[in-house]
Each structure stands twice: as C-alpha cells, then as structure tokens.
Length: 135
Image 1 (tube, rainbow, N blue to C red):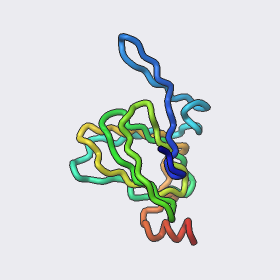
Image 2: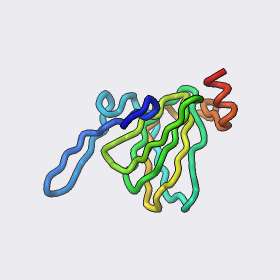
Image 3: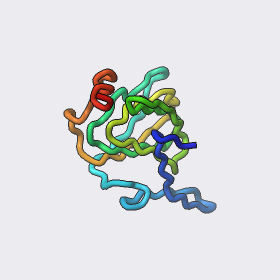
Image 4: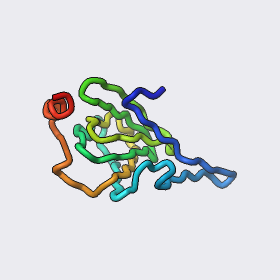
C-alpha cells in the first residue's frame, strides 16, 4: 500500500524461458530526464546510508539485487518502504528526507538522478531540514 510519501514506479517486465528483462525509458517509467546514474553496493552489515534531503533533485531508486528499507520523512509524516523487486522503483522527490536501512549483504541500489551532483542541493542535518520544509 502506498502512502502519500511512497511513490512506487513499476517498470515494464518482459520474460520468457530465457529470463526476464525490465525497461526504464524517459517518458515511461522514468518520470524525468536522467543526468546522473549511480549505484550503492558493498554496504557493511549494520550500516545505514542516506540521512539527507535535496532541495531540488528528483531521484528514482531501484534495488536490482538484495533488499533494503528506505525511511522517508517530509517534515511531518514518516513512512518506510522495502525495495526488493527489480521491476519496482521508488521516486524520491525534492524536500523528502531519506535514510537507507537494513541493506542485505548482496544489496545493489541503482539511482537515477535528474541532475548532476551539486553539494549545495543537499540538506544533511535533520533539524535543518525540518526548519527548511516546515518553517
């Protein structure tokens, strides 16, 4: 079930006796033009990642191996979603605090980002984030 914070995106899934194929096309499952792609893997057991928000950046996260739990927070509401299917992505819009927890040893998370890396777009302190979005 989706909450107002959780925006899941389903990718086309094709398959036959040889295996499966998922497709991510701009204008299709990708809701924005992609300017940067990165992946997170090899996270040590018990380590959490993220702990930031973006002022303007849209992202789409797809767990292509293993699983992880992502906690989302808009300054008022908080929710968790588990990603563990290669044909389902999580859209993280701007102004959403996100944390990645419970990454499995084989977890590979690929992230499609709307723009290049820009440190000035990050909010890395949760209290500062709350002030930014709530006032």
